Image (cartoon, rainbow, N blue to C red; front, side):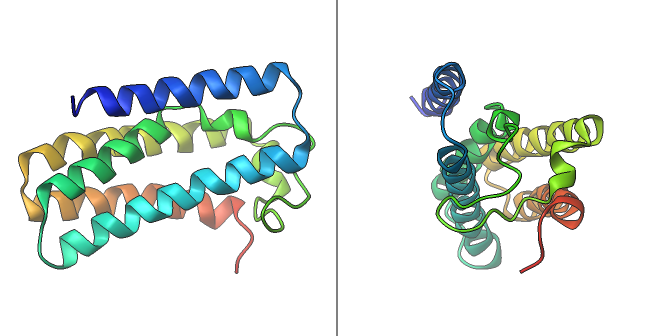
Length: 154
């Protein structure tokens, strides 16, 4: 059952993104979806960080890592539609316009994120806190590399 949930999340996100792409959603809605996805990623990241820095709960880490991997493999690029370079979703978009232009580099960054997220999900199953912490650090570097180039600084 634990392996089914990430698969179902990935399928749901893919189907939803495909359906919405066919219906030509308003830019504001796409920005909201994008911002929501990153909020969920942040929530999962905080769950993992709390476990690698404190008392380790393997099941909690596995759930958060699987959710992160499912999102990483869901086709996040569909959330960067033309016309969403500017605007407001839940708040003003923090995506720099360059992310919409640097397709090859962004694709490489997304592939790195997916690879490290998948590895984290694998490592989490073993329940080795030090190994999870090391892999979580690698995943964090993929986030940072994208944020450095493509996210407006807070």
